[in-house]
Image 1 (tube, rainbow, N blue to C red):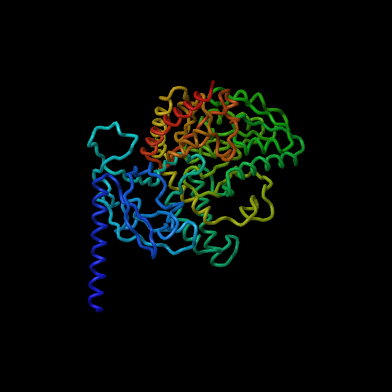
Image 2 (image 1 turned 90 degrees about the vertical axis):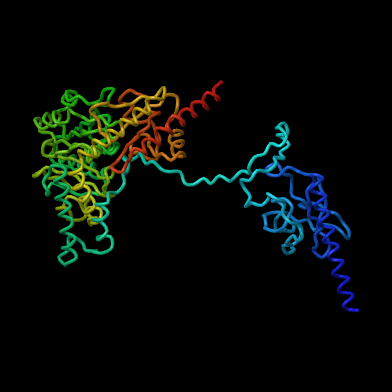
Length: 534
């Protein structure tokens, strides 16, 4: 009897399976699709349901809400993720998660995938069932859409005037002092002597790069610190004399110079410039007074790139009047030749962040025999001219980068000028875009652009989204997109400028990426502006 009962149950199960297969075939032929309907004991049966569009136009999943009551009520599954080997459409081959009760997941059973609904069949032709395209000819077929894999956008870094890429030679020189050799250069033990030798070697390298004597080099942490050391040292020296209380500078200096002069409490004469950012030597000479303590003038502009060819004449005139001269070469160092001895200035500040030296390393060149009170007090380091423990890794890297630049400057300057010429040609081809600054006597690595009708911030953000990094204004105003005082002094639009600068690691592909992205960003912003205007 048991064998007969088993045979009867097996035959009944086979009959039910055949009935389900026939039901699925009839559903396919009639243009309907199978639907999973839950029964008691977590069994599923197939019901025919009118065909719905699949893809983004598909309606809510079957059984997500509601359901029939009684013996044959559904347990309201929410259809989620495809699972191989079950389900009708690709969207139905999913695990089942209850909506209104904490039941375990119920894997659907007994439903096979329809042909060409498996994710592995992506790209094979299928029938388009989108009701919005019913006007297409009969039999029109298309492949399944593939997901677009948006990888990382390639970056083009064109803000080297703010901070450039660390040179490999500088990195190699820094590593031994980052991992070991912790000695203080001012100590007499072996570790201290080792670091002292490294610091003095870097001092010689920096001096050779900028035409100075090693004893004239005073290491500082940043370019603004070197500027403040020069200005405040000259002011304290003048106050000690008691008869000098006047400073002279120009309107296109970096903010460290202008703010330091303003905070001294002395009278300050700010000399204007022309439309290209050039300062006339005669204007500076006219501003000199009998009580002038210091003249501070830049060698090249940090924002528009104009090189001040009148600096030697200004230095000679000031020295003839017995006035100290500070030349700010922070923007020019590493890009054009800087010869401290040939300039004849008393003080010269240089910074290495824009030409591949490590950040946190700069220098003030002090003429031999000139005694200045220190700006940072509290120690006898740097021959009592700058207190504080020397940053040995940064100083060593600064020296290595200076040694490399001293040899590679002509080649790197020519390469940078060719790249900035391409930037200028691509940018000025856009209507309403002009270039600021002297087009000939300029820094080779820097271009300042004026964009009519578009502010700087949206252009920066648009280029950044397309993988291009540029800046507006100077590196001193990195977080403040305020009107540029340099451009205001030149008499041009101070709110719509863009600074593009290349470095030793820049390539032609970086400039080409900018040349493609810049017209698109400017055109899009102008179109949006025209739509908003009445």
